[in-house]
Length: 375
Ligand code: ATP
Ligand code: MG
Ligand code: MG
Image 1: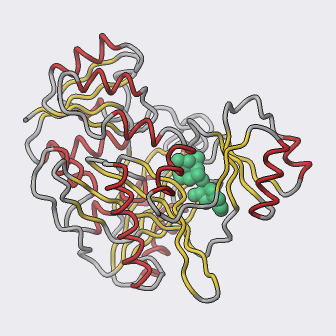
Image 2: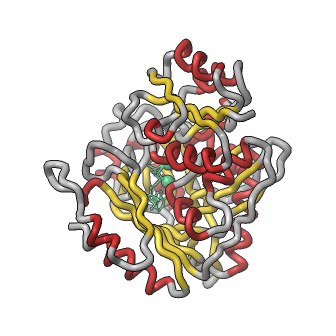
């Protein structure tokens, strides 16, 4: 097909649309309002609430294949799309990825290493889980959390009592992993099962939000290979077509690097933005190729080292004043990506910067220098 539908208007949809346009596709975007980031670069936009099946069916009729950029789309909405065009990922992938309990259970039952977890609904059950895993534990809402929202670290029974258990619906408790590194692997997979993985990204978070991605990850090549295998297996077991990002913790247990899956996301991932400059094929182009049944691209790095730093709304002035872009751009070799969002809020992802080169230390120093020059 020659028209791709993207459900969702955020920065992931925007960078996807740019990659698709480069390959000659028309991209239609379905989103809540015409000033969302992806709408700016789309061939056409259909606006409406996600629950409005009539609006989304009008959209779907204009598309040859449909994909999405966030997993919290009602499964019925994606099923409605599927009546008009092949939709990747499909409703069953979303149903799993929307629910931490179902997601973790599915991966565990497939024999994959996931963070130890248990469903809980109150303080008493959270304490029971903590007796089993050891304190501290982390409790998360089963549904609709992102950027660490809806999560609490519990150090003791008093912390468990302090949680507003009614507010979150269903919860899970997880063992708190004392990890050495956090990494992610983006997998692409076509409908016929052909798939690739990108090199392992190492991720540093600040306030539960991704701050810095570096590659290569500082883990052994054996652990990298194992992480890529695990991610590939997770993609097969969930039967994802398109992209799947697998977030993992690497824990040092008696000198061995142990891998735990934290969570998965069936879409382009913030950590994968670095591939635009760092790899032969970007995650966005690979997504296009995968859902269109094209040959998948080479994921190899084209540079010895690369890094990506996020730009949150905190860098904007209190009255929305723009950061000092010329100062950041005067730092040599820094690629700036802005998402065209109109309103800056603290913690909101507004853009990112990437640098590539031969030394990771030197690249990350440059990115911090460029970011610090913004204020
Ligand atoms: P997003 O979808 O934006 O990645 P989220 O709200 O789904 O975020 P998680 O990925 O589950 O949240 O957790 C956010 C961060 O909190 C993780 O990247 C990790 O740094 C930390 N974290 C989460 N769970 C654990 C755990 N069991 N042990 C140790 N750290 C954890
Ligand atoms: Mg998440
Ligand atoms: Mg996460």
